[in-house]
Length: 220
Image 1: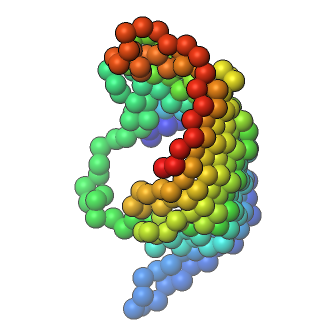
Image 2 (image 1 turned 90 degrees about the vertical axis):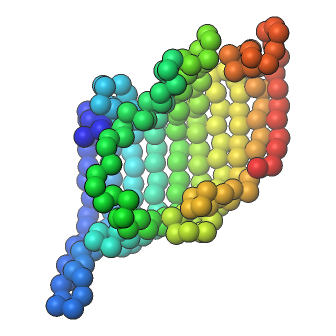
């Protein structure tokens, strides 16, 4: 497996139904609720990949053989994601990818819909060793509210996302987006960006160090 679950607890209450007929494909369907708590996951090298205090999923109907998953709500508390890039430009999440099995490209794409998504107390730990001097950022207090998420082509979800950093920066995004194809119409606001922290990325374009704070507002 590309990841290793080091700890965690899984509980739930599910209703399971199975139907088979001579002239129809068999169907295995699930509905109910699932809770994951106190989970820690590492990648194949042993480096931390994510941690989770609690995740609650309310499943309206999941048709496993058809690849259709309809959730009424998905809520998470204390999700922490660890992302890094080494000096060769290799991203940590790329280590999760294995070889593509034969026939994988012809498989039916899963259809996932989530009516309400809620994230509280999220964190993102980012380390980048590629630019000279390196870069590090820790996003804290990440909050996300999203309605109408779907992988159905062209379907757009409405969302509001906010976060802060250990450097006293803050950011917010809100609007709508479509995962397939990827498209967005959003507004973004960044406040108090510490410019000296981003110098490793600006160095190729500047002759000297840069200091100060920057506020940004834009439409995407």
